[in-house]
Length: 333
Image (cartoon, rainbow, N blue to C red; front, side, top):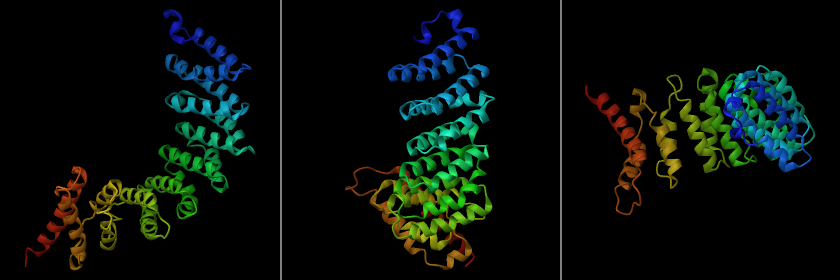
């Protein structure tokens, strides 16, 4: 029965809201799978219409109990409810109790169930990220031999880092090791490397990440997918204490002419952070300038199918910055 069909006066009654919650709970235990899925799908509507903290907290606990005692087919739909209603999670005062229920599944013997538990923790990271139990549980999943479980751990790590940046110090060595392992799926490596952009506020970790980015760009077996992620993470940690070096600007400039637009954008965005120092002016930058000029000229050729304004703008700005640095340095002479 749809929520909108209830009378307007009853729709704003907390008593009716709890009655509706108990009805949904009963329907979730129906012997028919379709009825259970339909009932679970009604929870986001219930939360949106009645965002009472007591109701929301009770409902999430009931979903947590159901997650523990249901087959994976239902766990999938419960995890989706957490994703759809994550903005209501801060209203619950039972986050720790809820986490305990999910951890029971995370430490089960079923790898698919563990994947779904990881997904749910990621969806509820707004309240789970601060708990060491959640962080430790995710960290252990990196040791799994199941590729789906590792991928889910990576996804959950990214979610936890949004709300608990200090978690990066805990998971740092594990993430670096996995990101450097060429036997890991490219998509997983790329997501791991992108998650490391959260190292930017940390002076020590951002400096270490700079060196790892240099390694990954030259590492045999690093594909374009991985290198694109490296360029994005590299750009994120470029700061006053961690500026792009001349030798690295030279390395990055080779991707300015890459056939893939995403690689051109990523390389030009990183190259745009380069501020040539006085010591750099004694070095040969003709190669970097030549590639930038070649790319800009290519955009004005009749054979060019579509003009890439964004990349052209980045290239012109990078070229102008290099020229200005040399002009200013040579002015007294």
